[in-house]
Length: 364
Image (cartoon, rainbow, N blue to C red; front, side, top):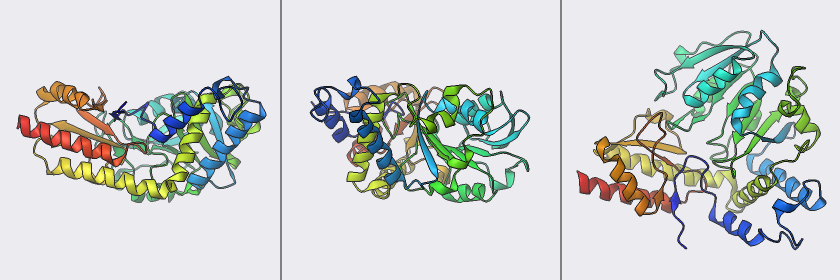
C-alpha cells in the first residue's frame, strides 16, 4: 500500500516508522502476550511505557527539573478553563493576546472566571499579522500573559522577537503550542506554562500535555474540579483515573522517533526547509497567494488561496487523486491549508508544489 501525504491540520499524520512499530506491537507488546491497549495502567509493564515516554519528552524539549509534565484528558481546550482555575482567584486580571480563533476561544472561557484584558488583537476574526508592539496594552496587575503561539486556522505564528518582548514584561507567560510544539527548539524556562493538544505534532487526539513550573502548583481555587486541578495530576503521575493509555504509548513512540532522527534541532532544519520552499513557490506564483504578513508566517500551517476561487473544488479533487489529502482550508478562513507538521516529509511538500505547478499551468 502506498500511503498518501496527509496535510490535515489535526488529527494529523504520524511518522510512518511510528505507525509501523505500533502495528508490529499491536497484538503483543514486548512479548507480554497483550496489546498496550489491554494493559492495566498501573501494571509494571505499562509504567515502563509511561516513564520512558516522559523521559523522552523531557530530553527532546530539554525541560528543566523544576517543571512538571502532566498528561491530561480533554485536549488543549479543557485548559482554557483549567488555566484561570489553577492560577487566579475571582476578581483577578489576566492578559491575553487575541490573534485568531483559538485565542478568541481561550478568552471567552477565561472570562467566565477572571477579568481578561486583551493586550492586542488584529482586525476581524482572522488576523493576518501579530499586532505591532506599539499597540500592545498590558495590565500592571495581570497574574499572567497568555498567547496562542501558532494560530492553526490562518497560519499566524509568534516569532522570536515578539516573544522576547512578551517575556520582558516580567510576568508568567503561558503559551498554547498545540500546533507548533517541538517544531523547533525553545527555551522552556522562559515560560511559566506550555500546553498542547496531541493531535498535531505529538500523537492521536484526546490527550493534552501541560508543562508547568512547579511553583505554580497548589494555587487552584477551592472550587476547581478535581480533574481540572493540576496538583491532582502532579501527585498521581497523571494517573488519578485511567489515562488515555494508547495515546500515551503512541506519543511515546513519536518522542523516541524524534530522538532517533536527531531531536528538535534536526527536525527544525527540515521544517524550515519545508516551509521556505512552499512559501517561496506561492510568493513567486501569480495563481496562488498567501495573506499572512511574511514575518508572522507559520512553519506548520501554510494557508493559500487560488486566484480564481471557482477552481477550489477542482483543486481539491485533483489533489486528492494525486494522493495529497486534507488541503481544504478551515471554514472560518477559506482557501487551502497545508499543515506540514514534523511527520510530513519534505517529499510531501515537493509533491504538493509539483501538483500546484501543474494545476496552475492547466488553469492559467
